[in-house]
Image 1 (cartoon, rainbow, N blue to C red):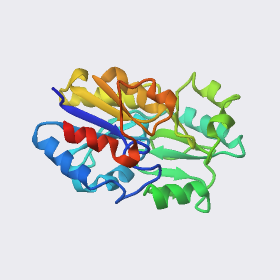
Image 2 (tube, rainbow, N blue to C red; image 1 turned 30 degrees about the vertical axis):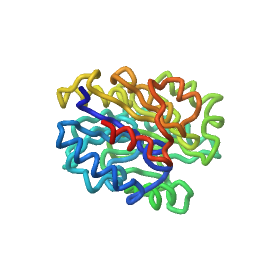
Image 3 (tube, rainbow, N blue to C red; image 1 turned 90 degrees about the horizontal axis):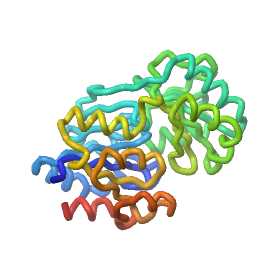
Length: 265
């Protein structure tokens, strides 16, 4: 019997960078119905908590949130249930390394806020105006930020994988967990973090087993939840290499493929 449904957001439920009002309102009715039947729903994303909350505002009080690529687990009451920050010394070195790649921009996700360098940047405008992030531009971040850092995310509009493959990813994949989140983002979290670890915590917190859980996704950073679920659905609009991991491919995101499966459940 299914007791927990976990879904990625960008590319799975809505187009990348979509904000409040972008989710088909039918999802809210189905999530409420599932809740009344004893089935919990968790939104899982590399986004920060306020951004996810805005997308799911009408049902935020009855769902759970896996945020920052697994660095934070919360509920609709804004209570922090679980947090896996990176070591401050590691964050400082990571930022300094990111600054060496001139084509790259980056943001630092803290427990209180998300930080970037400049307001007049493509990253700031996209993340604040489209994703609905709470973002603070702080200028020079070479010495880190005064916050518990849950994730460092490197950004390029189309080539972050190529720009980080020579030395950045080989170095940091040994010290932290690095995953591609679409073509624009490289997410870096603690080795004790990630979507899989966060889902494992949430299952223990709720008293729900992996065999009672199903997962929806579309990207590399969703595949680590496979071992914590009985079935991994991939939307038909995902990249072919991600579909290889799927137990089942549902209709694509523009056709609300996840919603179609949830209605059958």
